[in-house]
Every structure is written in C-alpha cells, then in structure tokens.
Length: 89
Image (cartoon, rainbow, N blue to C red; front, side, top):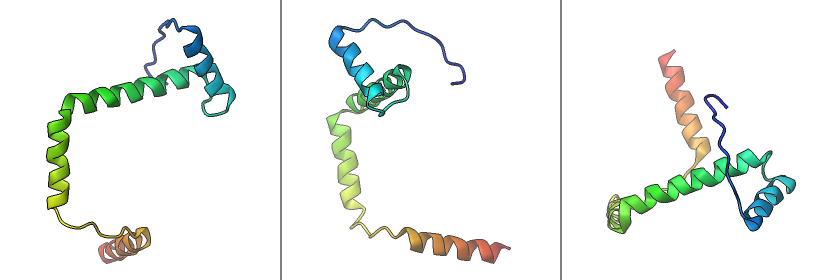
C-alpha cells in the first residue's frame, strides 16, 4: 500500500474477535484489510450523513423525473462500442 502509515488501535474483546474472525473466515486477507474496509464504510456513511436526507430526496426526485429506466444490455453496449471503434480506424 503506497503511502501507508502505521497506527495503533485498541479494540475491545468483541471488536478484536470480529476482526480476527473475518480474517479466519477468508473474507479478508489480513486484520489491516478489515480495518481499512471498516474505515471506508465509515467514511461513506459520514458522506451520506453530511449530504442529508433532503439532498437525497432531491436526488431521488431528479432520478424519477429523468424518465423511466431502460434495460441494461452489456452486450449491446459492447457491440455499439466496437462499431464506433471500427469507424474510427
């Protein structure tokens, strides 16, 4: 991890067991990976909390107002991208 710095963290018994269990289960490669994932989730939640419910409602309304969703067809997207690529050659 580029630019990684070490930090000591004290956990209570339950937290420690949860971290160790996550590694032992194979879900994470190391205890550091568990902590980094937890911090990432925490940062995401803080971001969401800072946006506020009103802003989320505004975004929801914008999405609804943008019209109905269309089915997502990755094969069609790839086909069109290939056509565009071939035109540019």
